Image (spheres, rainbow, N blue to C red):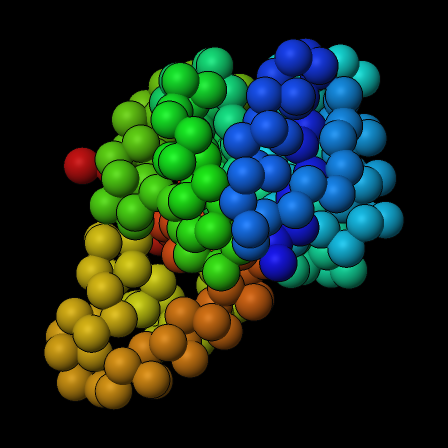
Length: 224
């Protein structure tokens, strides 16, 4: 059973999402939050698997709440799926920077929402590395926002990876699968997976899409 918290400041939206999710035998709504602060608290208290997170909420916005959840080692298993009406590149990248595992617009069909929850709950990213790369390339050309990270700090952190881990991270950011990376480097897919997992652990990334974000934000790769 996948345990879900719905975080949205509109009661009607929360009720609609609850109705959709309660039709699924493998999904259970264990809490509702009207703001980001409540979402963080429920993620701590309710043994949550996935938080459906709106971006614009009072007291604490969804991106800040996502960052708090994903930065807490005690909540390492919690995945955040951002669901919002504000479908802009900047919001997508800010959500990924904060640690979100996926992003959906509120115009998505019910079956797309339920399947997205299942995807992020099993640890996969809802956005492909190639799609994430395209977003990052565009956004990095724009003026920095309040959610942009300290790129010098990221650069130093990435330099702490082994040479092989950085090499694998670059290939992940270029959109290659584990099998394709294994062929390129003449190593096994299992070894690639080990390097990916170690890089993610060292950098605090929840999934491959966030490795792409960090590869560009740290300067390991540059927009074309």
